[in-house]
Every structure is written in C-alpha cells, then in structure tokens.
Amino acid sequence: MSFPSDTFTTGQVLTAAQMNGIGDDINNLWRLTFRAVTGTSDTLVLADSYNKLITYSNTGTTTITIPSSSSVAFTTGSIINILKTGATGTVSIVQGSGVTISSAGATATNPVITSVAGAASIIKTGGDSFTVVGRIA
Image (cartoon, rainbow, N blue to C red; front, side, top):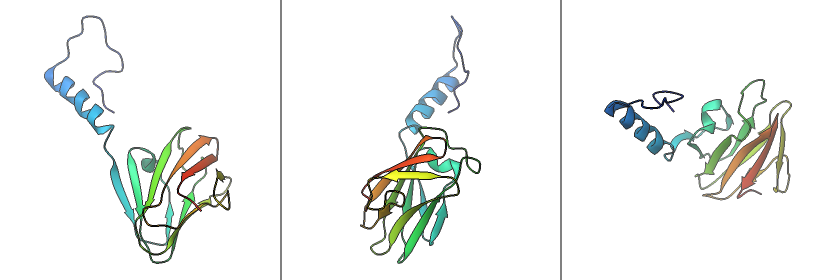
C-alpha cells in the first residue's frame, strides 16, 4: 500500500489526492488479481502471496513447487491461493529443497487437487514450513 505517510502528526491536513489514494489502497485490499498457469510446472514467487489467485488448467499433472525461504522470502502468515480450473489433469503441490509441507491430504507432504473448482490455500507457518488447506486429496 502507498499511504501518504507512515505516521501522521496532530493537526496534519491531508490533500484530496492523498485521501483518494488511501481510499484506492483500501479498496484494492479486497480485489484479487489472477495468474493463469497452463503448463506442467510452476514455482511460486513472492508476488503470488498478495491478493492473487493462481489458476491451473492442464490436461496432465501440473506440479507446483514451494521454494525455500532462501530463494523466495515469503513472510510468515503469507497465503497463496490456488484453483484448479481445467476439466482434466491434477495439481500437485511439492516441497522445494528444505521446505516442509503439512496437510490433511492422503500424502500429507504432497497434497493434490483432483477436481474441477478444487481450491487450496498454501500458508507459510514459519521458516520453511507451509500448511496446505482446502479441497485436496
């Protein structure tokens, strides 16, 4: 967000442009942007953790790799939202080097989305640890 100042002082008067900018920033907090993936592999990037929905559509398996903190510095509490949009294929979430995934999936460290409109959230819980929640197998 780009608020006009990190701190405000008593009696400070904001311009109309500054007030409009604050309103725009607040409104944008609730809007998702989309990133569509149609290939067979994807590695998450820092921009994926801020108001983004990543959609996956491929006739085969698409593998999503969660990179280590030394590669991509997601902050603890970051959430990456993913959605399988293709009628066929699966979405498989895998651990990058040094990463630990936990989930309620059949294979807790390698959750998979198999159904159309199946969605999941990948949450960084600390260090190189991530938890995957959602419609996973």
